[in-house]
Image 1 (cartoon, rainbow, N blue to C red):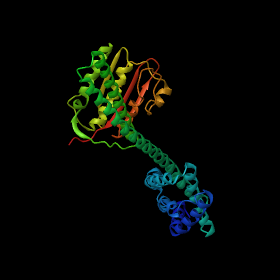
Image 2 (image 1 turned 90 degrees about the vertical axis):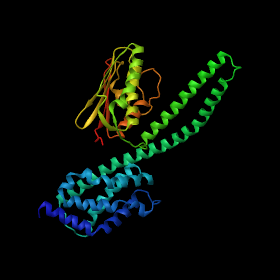
Image 3 (image 1 turned 30 degrees about the vertical axis):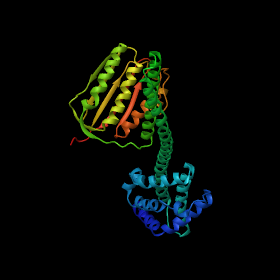
Image 4 (image 1 turned 135 degrees about the vertical axis):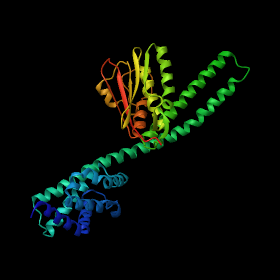
Length: 368
């Protein structure tokens, strides 16, 4: 019997005995994974789909070569269920290993002929499912953690808004009093500035966590590149000039684009502000390239440079380089999520004492 025909016979056998395989698998999982508290209906979610895809992969060699694609949807749903049930990744891998064992056991118990090539085929297919499931599990677990953290910080930010706003209003009302001396008014002005900073930081943290939790969706609109970029460029050019730095910008202001203005401004504002903030001399540059399929934004600065270790963490929330300059460590994290929310990519390169080059891409969308 040739290999293709052998796989087809195995597929038919699995298809005929799905219920037996499911029952065998369920008994093994309940016995070995200490999940007696979980309802059988919850445990079985997704297993029928896994078996259906095993049958498909055995019947179609092309499906096997595209293993990552065929497992994507079922592994995502399965992973979300496992995160909800409290499974760890070891339990996830073990239950799919037990599925492979259940399939092979049914072949053995019912004397269904299977040679070494057949065993390898079934093993390879389920190994592909395990790999896809691990990735989906990690994504689902991380998403769940980010969502919980966003909800907690969202509640905290909401609770902070009211007292900060009340304090700012009280300060403004007091400052209107004619009985206050000039030093007292200056003190109230300082209080208001710091309250505004506290409010800005609260909003920044909230926005960062909403991005991390995937709760910010891209809302592209038809606009021009200049409408998004011009004001940011002028502000940064002014600040750079005050610091004695040179600022150059090269882009087509009239270029028609379709993108999320708020998210794109957020990325550029963070990258340009960092470039000006950390450059005490030299050239700061913004270049926008209009390629066939995407826009690429380049921001180069004259900072002291970042090490390889710093580059690995620089886009993570609350992680900063070795600089002593003040900051929350959220700007680049916000930039990364804002780019990814639009289907783009962001990266950076640097070297000790040679400045930084940040760039990000946004896919070109058809202007309506």
